[in-house]
Amino acid sequence: MRASVCPLSTDAHFQIHPDPNARTHCAQHPAWQKHLAERITAVAREVGAAAVYLDEFGLGGARRCYSVRHGHTPGATSTPGEIAMAGQVRRTLDEAGLKDVAIYFEYSPVDALAGP
Image (tube, rainbow, N blue to C red; front, side):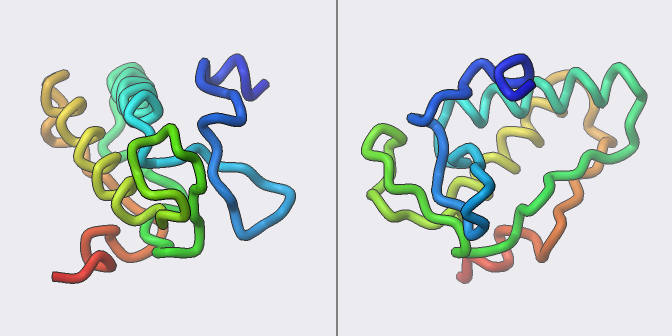
């Protein structure tokens, strides 16, 4: 199922998750940001969504990615990627004419956790 949902489903794109049985895509990976933003926008348009939900965003530094291929320092937390991902989703929604679609996060907004 995972491969049919995301064409980026290789170990090169995953980061360490606190749950040893789970893997998540690295939010700092540009291809994942683009893919997820496009899918969210397509589904939002298709169903006429008033809001979209970014699950587990805002969790802070609980997840780290040690890849040297994602453009960040190995061991980086997910927070900078979540901020970038949320921005990419917003821009993609806006470009599709969906400026009124709200973005909702599971935890505190990721930019609030990033500090000044």
